[in-house]
Length: 335
Image 1 (tube, rainbow, N blue to C red):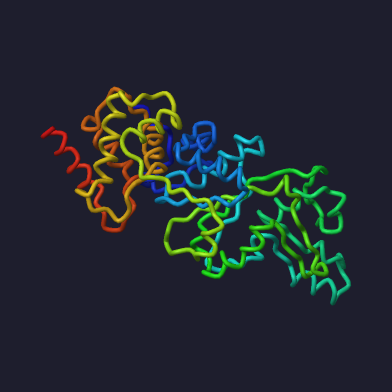
Image 2: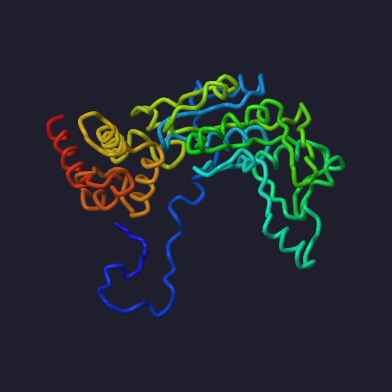
């Protein structure tokens, strides 16, 4: 097995290296792209309905099943950029945060000291949906609202906007966005209540994701297209690996074992705090390949390497990686 060079993490020398350690390239480098993304057929139907109605699309599903990547995939497939404009919802998020941030402290300091810009627009930073709406308006119509450095090509353009994990935001957050999402318009009080409204043809395409940590308001749900990404089974995991990792087949002995192992780890026979999902499976395979294992090997033949890599799949306090692997190996002996 060809293990890539790594630093003296065991501290056998009890000395620092003479110079910075040159680490191997990340095993995930180049993997987080839309080219290998495999959308569920039901998700494609939801995309088409969303594009026809221009309604926001709410995607739910367990963590790690590709909800976030779905927005990037749609943006890529529509030729609107490699990634969607992204807003990460937080417990402190307000509706305004989705459109812009205003540096009120900096503006106050400039007014008191007479140093720096005296223009309020210079203290605005547009965020995901605000950026998308601004780009959906001809540049000459919004010159007064453009802060320094804002990129606008001139003609109106369309964007895909991702509002990630909307269920993390306060409950009022979705309801506060009803008018804005319906009409793709918002106002900026700091600029004399300046209204910015996207041209109808170029209205942003909005995708929201939720881990279903809490229920969303009914009034908000009525305005959304909805799709739930189903829990992937063994066959779907196989297709994802062949598409996202490359250079392997589901019939390779090692891949067969890996697919059996993750299916076992996700089954009701195993008690884990978090069931491993697609993202963890891909990381697990990438680590094993980086460690030089061969696709014609079996897990039982490389047990120490597999055990050392199971931190990609098993992520709960009190969950025993060694016990999980032993339990799975026992199923192989009786099958």
